[in-house]
Structures are given as C-alpha cells and as structure tokens.
Length: 389
Image (cartoon, rainbow, N blue to C red; front, side, top):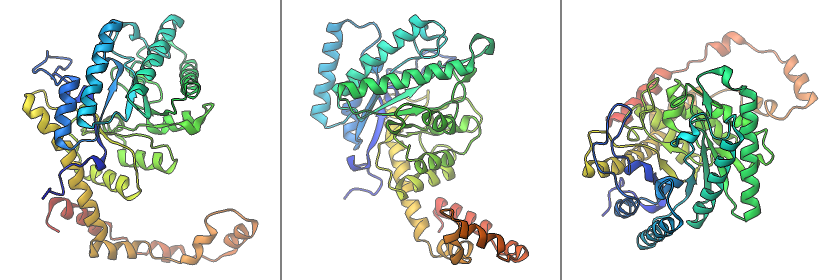
C-alpha cells in the first residue's frame, strides 16, 4: 500500500528541465556533476510519480542548434513523453543567458535586440504548443538596470507592455489558447529588476490589452529575497483570480536566490502556503523551481526531487490536521466571534448602510478588550508541525 506521502500524477507535481538538469555550477564554481539530460529526466520523474516537466526553449534545444538537430531532439523527447505519460503543462523562453540580452530583452534600448527577443519567444511558443503546453511563463531576468541613467524606467515598463500584448495576440491568432503567467523578482542577476514583486505584476497586468489572459507565477525565493511573506503574495494573487502557475522552492529571507528543496527552509510559511493552495482549490501544477545542493551526486539529485514532493504532501496532511484540530477550532470560534448582524453592512455600499453605520453606537473599549489568544494558536501550529499534537 502506498504511503500518503507517495506522489501521484493527480497531485500535479512538475519540475523544470533546468532543475534536475542543473550540473551543480554556481557563480564561484564549475560543475560538480553531470545533470540529467531531458530524456533521462523524463524517465526518472516518471518513476517517482511526478506529473510533468516544463522547459525553457534552450533547456531542450541548445541555443544555436540547426533545424536538423532540433528535429532530432524534439522527436526523442516526444518519444520519452509518450513512453512515460509525463506531460508538459508549461513552457517559457530563456531571455537571460545569452550575451545579446546582457542589458535586457524586451526592455533593451536597441530595437534589434528587442526584435530578436520577440523572434525567440514566438519560436518558443510554437515549440511549447507542439508539446501541449497550456501556460506560458515570462521571467524578465535581464529586464532591469544597475545604472538608472541608462534607461527610463517608465519607457522600460511600456516596452514590457508592448511585448506581452504582442504575444497574447499571437497566441490568439494561432489558436494556441495560452494563459500567460508573469514571474517577479526584485534583483539578481540585475541590480534591480523592473516589476519586482507579485503585487507589482498584478498592477501591471491591469494595464494590458487583454488582462483576463494574463496572471502571475509567484516564486517562493523571489518574494522572500526582499523579505516579503510569500504566503501573503500568493493569497493576493489567488484573490485576484490571477494565480495561473506557481514556483515552489526553499529560501532563507534576504539571501541570494538559493532555490533550495521545497520545505528545506521556513516550514511554517510553507505550511500556510500549502494550506492555502489545497484549501482554496488551486488546480494548477505544483511546480518545483529548485536545485539540488552543489554537493549532490546523480543519485542525490533524484532524492532532492522526491524530497520536494514528499515535503509538500507532509504539509498537506499537516494542514488537514490543523483544520480538524479541536483546540484550533475552539480558538477560531473565539477570535471570529462578534455581532454577525454587522456583516451585511460591510459589503456592498448603499446610502442606508452608510447612514446606519454613522449613527450606530459602538463601544471601542469593549471591542479592544476581546481576548485574542494568538500565542496559543501559533504554538498549536508549531506543535502540529513538530508532530507532538
């Protein structure tokens, strides 16, 4: 009998080709291992119960490959997917690795660079749809600056808008039906990246021609780099109906982009994140954008992938335990108690409601005196996570 922590395809766990394929290189050191090839990764993940793989264009087809090479690579990858039943739910474009994008892709001052970036995306969208991808992610890793005099920030954002509008229309024209997800990050590899947070992306989306087709792809590490609460960012995106995809990993706040195994750091925030996703009915992929430690060998990389999925499922179980816990329910009843009759006054403005609220007599001292046992509640979270409840 399978453990409750055994991944199933129904859990929709996915990994990027760049995750297990990472050879252990970092800015200060050369590779420490041979990463999984795309075909090897598909076969390895199929054995773990994962649902799918995602890719940047050049994760699958190396930059500069000939048409013949691309055909061969695509054919071999398709065969691996067919053998294993692994899906490709999402695709994206690498607009950050090549020197041509050293000062941005969509936001470059050079129209030739911007045009080349457009071409690369259009071809990548074609490739993604060839594998059945439904979501297309944009991460503007080079869309930023170290020298603010080099670009006008408002012009850069307008160029981003032009680009996203263009690709949405291309998807519609081709009948691809993509939903687009924008991924924020405050810095690294640029000194500052435009539209640095999920909240900034949500504001930007409202300015697009077809905002209903564009959402966000929040990432744990990217939000926590700037000291923000990832659970809160995802909740805002979900409330806005814009959580189109999500990147899960681990991160120590305020550090460089670590992309650690999901659950490796800040188990409490990961707990509330999983509780939100499962409790609110998020039905998209649970995508792990993370890397094994540089110390890992080939076998340990697979242990890393299994660990990401296992951690998610453990936290899912803990969330259900928390919601069913009698002490938690008792505390919730206490902190949510109040005059339920006032609720009808607090949504949907009418003149009568405003008049009634202005004339009502409140007792601020009594309201302030209401007990809020948050210490007990937070300790209960800790007890449950530590397995002593």
